Image (tube, rainbow, N blue to C red; front, side):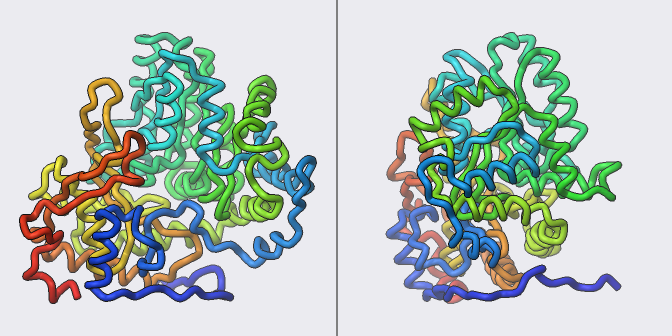
Length: 473
């Protein structure tokens, strides 16, 4: 019999959670325009909106806050962060930023010119926005299987090398400033990239003089999947695997709010000294001095420790295990989710969950709203709303994947909280036909999923038909 395990930490401080009534949740949802991003956190019971900046820091990290060097230039805390990045990730040069999108902004401005193409293994919202704002066209080169949530294969984040070769032949290597390789792939369901695929992508790009820049936000999770699933890595540490992963790239953007285990901060890392010098100048313009880049000294101290804590094998095994604990219960109950279960979240397949709703009725947005209404659990849409509009035609971008992301913050919730989430989803699935679609009543021009507002399409204005009221209470 396989023995059960527990969290590799003990709880030292607690935060009281809100437990609103059904009517209170309904009022909160209406105020938010049925957009879970606009719900006040004080009205949320279990918050699975994101794993970005929602980490519970360790006692060592909290203690380090008191030792932060807040010097404007030459901070000792910056030196410790720089050393941690060099030792754990292996890059020569590092520049701190206020968070990951600060690094994306600088990289995009320096590397992209009007008319360029940036291939990547599926887009991410802010990453693609920065690329397009600087004149590039994003091209998806992920394997086709990544767009089918029902296919269960170990490395659905892999690049299709034939797609990359075809793009190089079509537009020319000079029109491709870099390949943006996400490890793991968020919008595919937290799917990893194999080491072999990373190596092949890097070798192909080097033969054409093209850089490979990683979106390394959840790279430790990717390293763990390699350890589990790829031949030759079972007996190697996650830290060792991670170092090899980084060696098949020319640099990375990092949101420290995920796998660096902190609440704010990020960095841009690279091996090219010329790019580093140019990047350093833009850091001063957009972020701050190259020795703090938008972060306080105490934040850099906490990140330096978090970088090392994240590659502890016991920590990452539990991290992935808790996500699987949630996902496996849903699979056992025949709830449609993206397979295999990813590293940072479980993704509900909203199209299969609500087959009576067309994509223009925003099924993922409706399902995320219904989940909050049912139980106070906050999640997020990752479908047609997140995909935005085509910049030339103005039409909706229509991704194959219409998902609701249940994102697990690191070291925050117990498995009992996951059980509550499961119970709510099962209850919604039983009455899924009663969930109506949504109409977008306000649409921001960019990154609309953050601030768009919606209204139920039902004539009575109810998201879930009234006969299910008692079940929801």
